[in-house]
Amino acid sequence: GLLKFYRYWIVIAFILGAVGVFFMPARGAVMKTILQPQELLLANTFMQTTFTLTLLLGPALAGITIGAWGTAPAFVFDAATFFVSAALVTTMSVPPLARSVTATGSTLATFAAEFREGLSFIRGNRTVSGILTSLTTVMLAIGAINVLFVPFLTRELSVGATEIGLADSAQAAGMILGGMAVGVLAARLRKTHIIVVSLVVVGIMVVALGLSPTYAVVLGSMAIVGLAVTPLESALSAL
Image 1 (cartoon, rainbow, N blue to C red):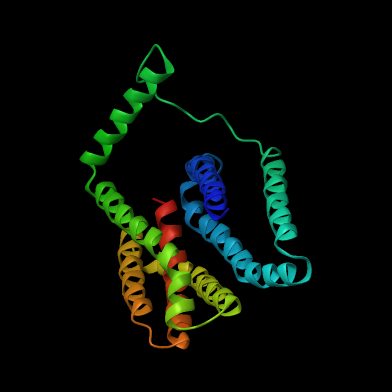
Image 2: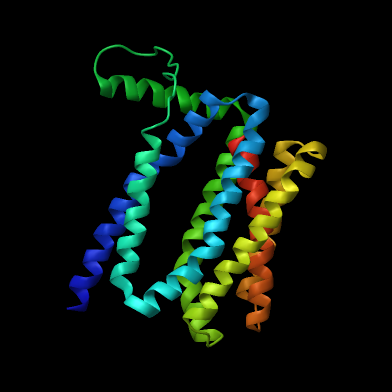
């Protein structure tokens, strides 16, 4: 029954999360291997803007697909896009990543030595440790928001699936504008300053979301969140 249904989705969500953990570090390593340091910020901005366009169009396409053919074809189409992406990645030519030899013997011993080396680097670098602490807190907050956002909209503001999709699109629109502003911000502010300002803006808007008296306030808050997210992610990836 319902319990079996939830168990099924919990397993799928766990697998997706476990696999997804490898993607972002690998992408970041590849980007820094094939690009020059001065190209990273704009490259990350381009990737973020491309992602944002899909986020802007995705809810509308999902609504059309589900309305016309149901949820199953929507899931199939979504899965197919990952296979296409994987096929495109296989066409890339990436030089071998340089690795420092920190341990010999088993793979587990090598991992343990590299893990300790990473922790030591974090402790010795105030910028990295500060950003890591901030982002850990932010990710915990985002997890709570992802769980509560839809119930908040449906129960407190009495909106439906269409309005929820529009809220996602409002964030995406803000992210596109943020992507356009990254070049200007990068020329005037240090990366760490962009990160701090963006985090503050996102935090204020999350409070505004929780206190939103109307759906219009939600749309505005989501748009401003998107405006801050693109510079934040671009600056983080370029560190």
